[in-house]
Image 1 (tube, rainbow, N blue to C red):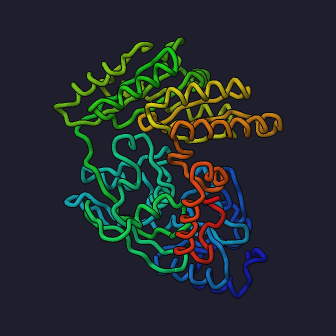
Image 2 (image 1 turned 180 degrees about the vertical axis):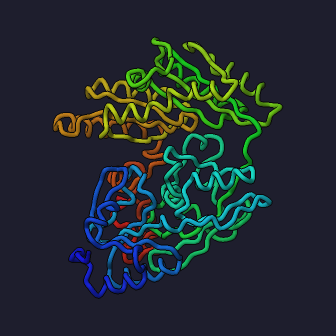
Image 3 (image 1 turned 180 degrees about the horizontal axis):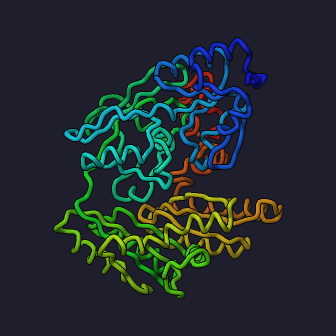
Length: 464
């Protein structure tokens, strides 16, 4: 197979084959197709796909790309939903999935060093052998890579207590867009020397630098865990309960929310054992030391029992835990079954404004005659707003576009942000200027130019 895109000459292909020998380079369209899309359902065919195994290869590749003015996009396993890993048409896709070494687990200093292709699950398993875990836990943890987690600052349910990638990363090795090798951060939990480039690169979606190694902060596994499930008559009562729970000294390690539409879909998909009159549900998880866990669970259950609460259950064994989580875990397959091409936004508002957000979304669903399903990480105000539409119906698509504009206006009006963990990528870039003012965007573009003067890395992503 030697057919290649017209943008990749035979001389350039020869150079790439020398740098990425054998199976580490794909150039036939039939082979590169699998790397032309991600979970955003966007697609763009690259001229070639290269698989890096060493940092030096990435440096050399970026030097060539700058010479050739050839853009590239990095990717891990392609689980992102914002299109950040979509390759530029006729450019290169740089896969980091084969850089998958766990370089160090250091229990004494509570850290791990890993390459970007290590999956979240592989890191968790390695850390657990020493009594630790890495807090970020996106839904795709079984397959998503650490590099991808860092690129979009992925989080998950545990972020409410333990924070996101930015709070749990000590330092990075990265290659900037101009080919310069960077060493950022520290191996200690304190360090204020220089600007914080680690946190700048995390969440930049591969537009500034290619992460080649990460030093991660590990957290000891909790001695004990309790799972609670609380049901409510309506979303307003559940949202008020979230505000009360997050105002208490006991911080849950997960606080998940489902509205009436979400519960209805799950009931049509399976039997979750939820009361028919339940209009909202909270899944609450606590992690504490063994002596404090029962008192903490009782305190949190009492806090959750506000007006409109239908009941609170506390699981006492693994079987009961699995039963309580069954409803939440059934939601994703139920949504895929009902609306495989739904619009999924992961907005965030201050926790105290969740009731206003839910009220506003209910009004918009009625106004635009669109079914909106809301669920997500209520403990930090990160709500996944799902617009269920038929993409083949022009009228529905037009209504969805108008509705989405109103959703973003609502979120920003409540002091919120347009994305909590999915990132910006291609999908949301044109909305960014609603949240960030012109002077700040101008500074961000200047920063991009310093790292990547020829706009080689992931052009057209993140910034409008």
